[in-house]
Image 1 (spheres, rainbow, N blue to C red):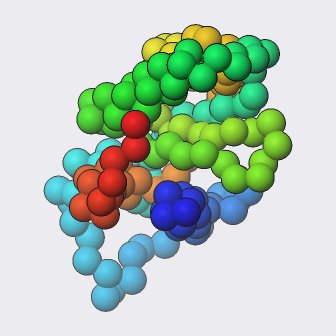
Image 2: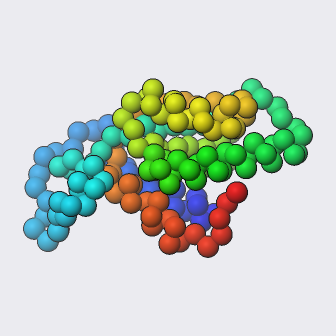
Length: 161
């Protein structure tokens, strides 16, 4: 449930910059805001504090793996892979969807091209096994997402997988 709250907050922050692809009006930051050029450079922010990513929705795949040991092994690899990609700075945000039918979860990758995200997704054992199939979209959102993994480490009491 905590992961869902974090995901909801993160997506809310993402959507606060743009809404359904509408252009952002060019206006200077408020006088009271403190622009941090070092942080902007660290996160890859443009002048609006935004950057490009690839958003991936994981949908239910064709595989019907019912053996509990095999599923446990696949999902253990799934979580280990996400942890590795996050530590490498490639996976910015991930999480399951709740009550979303065939849409099972999502990734946001620190890449700008779908081909690069596809290569990262192929390293997921659950995708390789056919449990999930990915759907890719280029995404423009807050560069602040690049800080999420470090923040999450300070909030996570129990590790998954």
